[in-house]
Figure 1 (cartoon, rainbow, N blue to C red):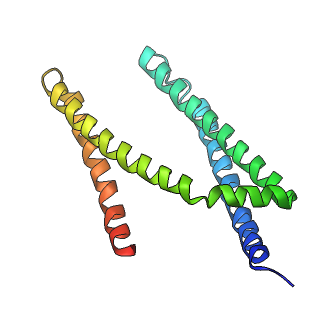
Figure 2 (cartoon, one colour; figure 1 turned 30 degrees about the horizontal axis):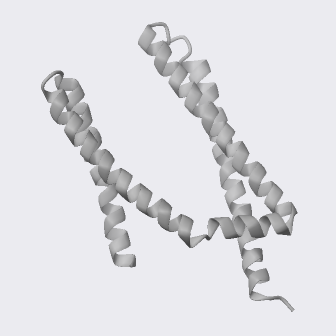
Length: 156
């Protein structure tokens, strides 16, 4: 007879399989990104700024690749062993960690927006382009935050 926990673990195993497929897709897209940066834009990185941007983009994609490979290996290991699967399930559904994560992101998001606003004010005294860029970034963050705030206000 199957217990409630067995049913939850079976559903979680299926969820992990879907997640693994999504991560594999992201890995493929990241590989395409690395190839594109090197093949199409490698010659454009002739100036110091272009070289810096090229290196940043390449490093970002390589870091993403490593992170995704780590998550895939973690999922594959958990799917092979029920004990590891249970440990991963408990770690992902831990209410204390979820609460800490929620408060951390909420507080750091507001702090970052305040810091961006202050930086935009200070930058306004020195460089118009930097000031406008910071204001645009602040505006985009606010636009991204608004639908989530509305969604979660209705959900809870």
